[in-house]
Length: 116
Image (cartoon, rainbow, N blue to C red):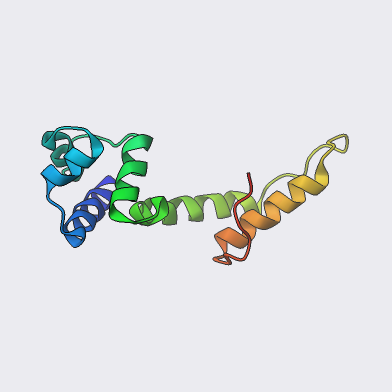
């Protein structure tokens, strides 16, 4: 999983034409950090991922495509056997809308935008 990310990260940088030192400068870190991220010696923070996503012009999801595929499969499996809430549970409409949107996203239908 992390190996796929590091390969994608390195490929994204190379495809962008940037050197490690360029990325380090844009991130405000030293070149060693970029090397460590690309070699899997250091896990990226959320801020690192957001910054690299911006630099490379790639979405967060595209940088983590392999991980997202695994997560989608796991969540879909759990979604199929989600227990019904107790009768006294109030906002059933919101729950149903959320679960329908989740199901659509997992099945690859991007017609529903992520809500806040």
